[in-house]
Each structure stands twice: as structure tokens, then as C-alpha cells.
Image (cartoon, rainbow, N blue to C red):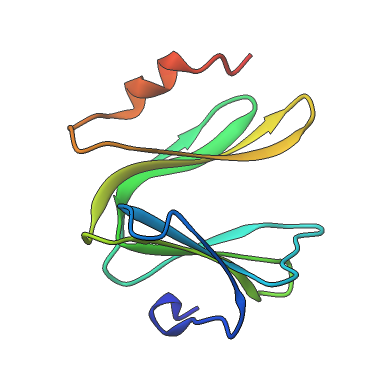
Length: 118
């Protein structure tokens, strides 16, 4: 998937003019699957997996979330370029949540200790 070239003709932009801009396609939807896609400038440092979550620690420039048909529905862009992030899919008692942790300080997967993932 070529995340660099993905654009939506219509939709909504969250966090406009902030460090992390989120573009959401009009009438977006996920049914059976959510797939994360990184652009060429992003790097995965470590895969993270727990009982009720999975994701990664990495340097993210641009990332998209696609549905089960491979159609990109959401685009996340770190406006200042590659930024250290933890990105997780978390299965909670009321559904699936997407958690993204970012900071201008250095951190590692131990930051997950602040969450109660039980």
C-alpha cells in the first residue's frame, strides 16, 4: 500500500495544525478487520503483544488504517516527520480501541505499565 500517495476527496481532519493530524474518510468503516500500513519513512522498532492488545513501538512518519478490502479509511501524519510512537489495538470490554502514545521525550514499551490492560 502506498501511504504517501493516499488522499481523500472528502472527509474530516482531526487535530488540524497539531503535531499529529488525522484524516478520516467520509463514511469510513471497518467490518471484519483493521490493517495498519506504514509509509517508507516509518520504522518498526519492536512488536508489542499482550493478552488483550497488539501493536508496535516505532518511528512513525505517516500511517494509514485500511478496512478488510484494503481501502484506506484513516491517515495519521506526524507533521514534524518521524516521531517515536507506540501504536496499539486494544480489545476492551466494550470493543476494540486504538491507542497511540507519543511524546517529545524518549520512552520505551515500559510506558505501557501506566495502562491497566487486565
